[in-house]
Amino acid sequence: MCSQVMEKDNSSSFEGFILVGFSDRPRLELILFVVVLFFYLLTLLGNMTIILLSALDSRLHTPMYFFLANLSFLDMCFTTGSIPQMLYNLGGSDKTISYVGCAIQLYFVLALGGVECVLLAVMAYDRYAAVCKPLHYTVIMHPRLCGQLASVAWLSGFSNSLIMAPQTLMLPRCGHRRVDHFLCEMPALIGMACVDTMALEALAFALAIFIILAPLILILISYGYIARAVLRIKSAAGRKKAFNTCSSHLIVVSLFYGTIIYMYLQPANTYSQDQGKFLTLFYTIVTPSVNPLIYTLRNKDVKEAIKKVLGKGSMDV
Image (tube, rainbow, N blue to C red; front, side, top):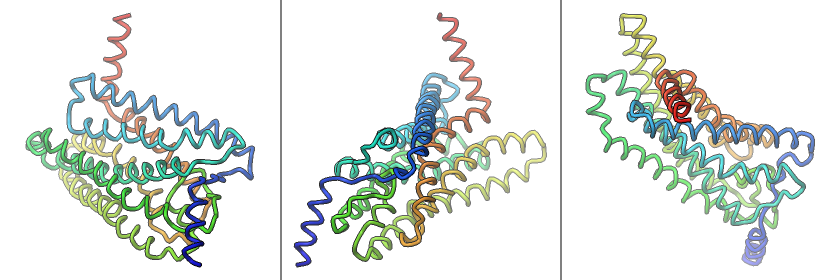
């Protein structure tokens, strides 16, 4: 009997899902459509600018901008993997998503979120080397190590998703297809299950220790050493320069981790759907769009690179 129910549930799951989102509030959906579209275009423009500047300006051919270009590419992939479907659902009455589409979205949201956690820790180590070991910085952060650290970040995120996405999708849902969210996100899909999900949540928490908490601890340790080194700098100008070097990254870390920890390190039964939706909006559309602004507005090198590229463009014209 149980196997028959499982079979029926699995077959119905493959029909796809209904992303409820804010369908009970159509006016809010219209406002969100405009807001999401604006931030998506801003994300593409800002992050593409960072990538192009990092490639075109030789002054930005450093480890810091190599990792920043990785972060920008990651943010573009992250938003493109989720926002077009979100805009489609917000802009009309059709709220459906195919099973395959939901699976792909879940896999990439989990994977790219994990990549960002590890990549931010790598960037913190880069800042530690720059501030605490300035004389040995170029030796420590050589191109081969930078490539290896970036590869570890990308492999960690995709490996974590390779474990969690299939486990989440195969949960029995007793024919339920309505996802109380506008994305196929893990907490919302686990919350739909009609079986005890304690084992899966324990696995998710264990993996989160390695993907979320361990990188965060490394970031905090790196900035502990950085703070101690900055306080030892006697000149005010030197302290200001060191602070400016790290402040942009700290702001990005705070924005990203503040929402991720709330979303993925709490039991599904305490998960507030409305809070979860707005937090998802924040780290899906706001954080990727403000990252380039944070690094650009507070970074002299990037601003000079923009002037140089725009100056060349105007001269060519």
